[in-house]
Length: 141
Image 1 (cartoon, one colour):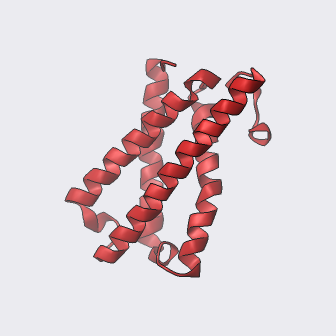
Image 2 (cartoon, rainbow, N blue to C red):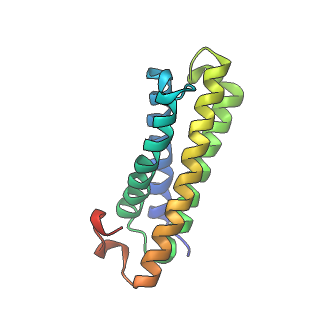
Image 3 (spheres, rainbow, N blue to C red):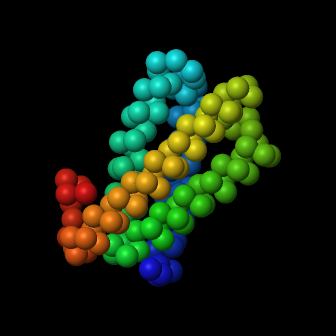
């Protein structure tokens, strides 16, 4: 279950990258998290983006099946810490409007939750199959 130091660094770095990308999405396309059909579509499509992000963490950090949940917790924990600090001390990073900050935060929280469930399902599947992470391709997750 324990991650090697290199894996922790990779997971932490990916957390920062993912948070920056998500924040840029909110900042550059605020309509993507606004109430209405477009915002709803962003929530739905974020499921696929979250799945890809979890897969990429497993791949780049070379996580074994028993390490997937620990790796996901490093990524999710770091991203949530960054998000919490941004919302508290730099809320305008998401945009100038409080409503946008709230809807953006809701989208980020949704993504964190979806990512946690996806990591759980990938770990469960890999543990049951007995295959190491490096043996699985994007199509087999």
